[in-house]
Length: 459
Image (cartoon, rainbow, N blue to C red; front, side):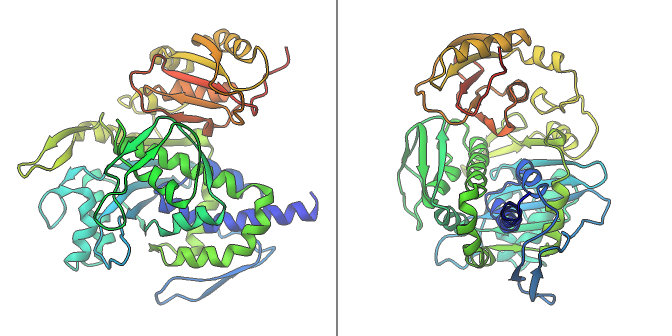
């Protein structure tokens, strides 16, 4: 490898370690990207930052040739990530806008992520029942020992029955600024969004309209897209959009022609993050966990959302619309995410890839349409034949709405995620090609839009 390419790789690793905190800001930790970026090198470029406040605060330097810190523990690590609904010029306390738990097993090299809806109605230790997103607010408002993060951690631990080792709490200012620093991101919007009641920076409305199709978002619009709840799936769809935005950010910042520009901005990026992140993880621990995650295969990561399958809609006596946890079902989902063993009760879309693929595909019985988004004649038909030979059910082939798709999309509409991810692997596409459409009444379960990145095998 040439010295210039090595430097670029080293810069990518160093920048990613800073941008890892932005991943926290939108409530996601994209293990696939961690694995790809950090696995390219086990060394860091030289950079010096200042740790956050505390007894051990001070400058931390990393030099070329210095090995990455390693995670030495052997116990499973669980981290509560919280995004706070902080408005400009407010001093708090704040509710949590996003909550999820990340888990890593250092011995088995497995990971998982469980998203928690903010309207989940649960017991809050020391207080009355309430929305889980109010735990952080109450902890700060009533001087709970450790403040809002400590009460949020205790509430999640109490209701899920899993230990929480660390927390990270952020606001969304850094997210907006980062997207602007990289010149915005390109996002494929699955369905038109029309949200007349999207909140402004005060207590009014800032009507939001986003057409379907490819859109270029600056920081403000990317945040709006990630936070709006005005779709059929509400909060459940929002978690999927956040993942989509984050992947677009990672794709943009790792383009080689962006690296010199971003390297020069690294101090500014860090200063932005410092004012937006509170965590009991040290920088060394963050880097060590990122390095640990780099060793986890995407096939060994389990994802879950406490969605409509695990909750029941309910209106409180004072008129609040909330979600009542169905605890037996949530327990099954919890055991699936936070263990390494197959769970018989887990939904088909959330079982491990080690189960019998043929049985899993037959169980989902997904109908598929294949659309050609390129100028390559006959591409949809040839791809459909490959899929049918694999035993998949192709119901329709045709042309997409455009022949200028650069990236292939596998749009899963009805929860048949296993089949969608199976198709991605079979077509030698990244799992990031799978996106979730919010249309349970779609004519077909899965739509494949072939882009110019798809290279079919020779005939």
